[in-house]
Length: 381
Image (cartoon, rainbow, N blue to C red; front, side):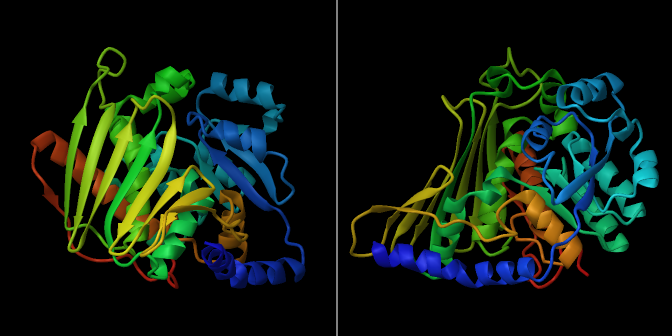
């Protein structure tokens, strides 16, 4: 499968060339960013891996829980002058160029609406919203303020997913017939998430659901991308409480079926896997591609045996969330579809429909349509 590996590498060359030319043209100043909320456990990754990056500058943190704020300030040696109890106050006094939201999912709408009044773009942790209503309100606020809103998923930065997408776009496996996405882990309590994270993650109001929202969003995002921004015609879902003693208020197991005119997507979201996993299978008319963790994939094409190939490194600025955010804010680069607001409004519609389907035992129809083309911003401007 040497020709296949060469093709995947060659497909990325133009993007690498553009990125290199932009970098060589002159160094950009660091992007001034602020953080809204500290209750999302993913903020730990920012402090551990990105706090001392030279291409960004942290100018403020808004967190009303002063005890939690003091904990992070002490743990990571943060200047206490960075800490604010109010997002509004922080935006007025620090004037960041972008905000990273590490709040509950329920608070995403509030964060975007406040930031929109100040003209500040937002990148939040997945998913976009706890309901289709909130997603549409976020979309409206972003459009009216002409700001970008991006959604960060771990799987956006997987080489394997992009290699699979390239094969699909080049018709290497024929037209898609079925997508199966597996996402989850043993459960948030089992893996030891912090109390401030667990508190809202297991609250149906603040999270939107349990595993359905926590992990179903990954599959909805990937399926919408793979299906070229197409909304499914129907959403059918089943949820369970396999561990009601641990998670009495939310589901811990969910299966979502998305029906398209010529394909299906099956999303398996779980807090019951024996180990953490995030992988995807895409079956076409003439072949299949199966991702293997974040870098590799198994491919079988017509007339050939299955082989394993390595995904190629992603080109900057599309190789990590902060590089993308910088490029979007400072250079006007269009967000990739996985992170875009347009895609994630559809993700929210899917999750909302899945929740209603699981409650009613009926399939829920969605309006037909696709996301705007990639040359348009997700706010529609």
